[in-house]
Image 1 (spheres, rainbow, N blue to C red):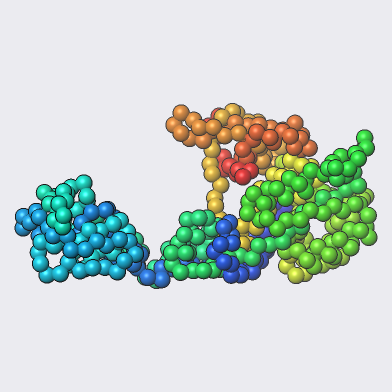
Image 2: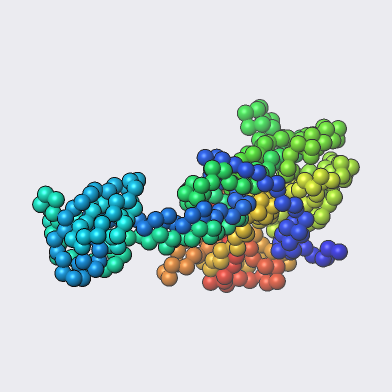
Length: 403
């Protein structure tokens, strides 16, 4: 049974409990940037796979240096990528080596060029290099079969470099979900259309799609539903059959022309909850279709929709993708806040660094939940609990970024 008052944390928990994991698939590493890893990456051999030279110079035996040998005969030159030469059995031999080369057989240290002089085939040095100096020992980074990158991370160039180094031409990642972003309402017109005095241009679907792409979910398509029951029925049927996630803005309140709640039910979408004790975004709605498609219905007001996307939808998509969850940062309020309603306050802020390098959040409240332009210049929002109404300067609050 749902609690009488659903908190933001409670709503998030219900979503995480209900939403299924997205499928996995294999992806070539050339296409894997930004995808979420779903299988560990392991070293296929020791890293580095051989004793590797880290300085241009000469490979010698450290014992010869310790015995006072200062003049060595250069018997070979070995570059990176060449099979290793051997010093042989003579104590005064050396091999000229380049950075990245395999350490020659019989050698255990490198004398850099800067500490030597060269005449013909003879190298002279006063160096007293210790064993393994300027040598990157085999397996000192990672051993064969060791897990280097664990599943649950979004792949960047760093992890892809590991995959390539360990012989993964393809990696197992989360299937990139197809997301339908639907704006509802007869008052909405396309951005390039003629707009009458009683109409407004569509912005929610553009804003939410852009935010989804920035968050790593590029397969997002925009739709518009008029407040016409048979059109809603047809479009919902199509979207629920073709898309992995449905994101709706507006149309789920109790107005005379809000047909979505009843139509969602007719098409097998089970409501998990409706309404969260927060401002903005109190009417937020969540449910699952018969084929386990998550349906998020956000308020139609732009600030409410954008805030709910970042508070619930993006964390839910990360969770369903197998991404290891990131806890919100904590920041100190730079100004006192008074918020009287017994609701959680999701308050836009701008960030700056304090005198001790702590993050300071300066409140930047918008004029209304329709004031999308008021978010321009803000960095994210803090979540202030409903359990109190006055928050002094320095109050530590959880913070979520818009990016």
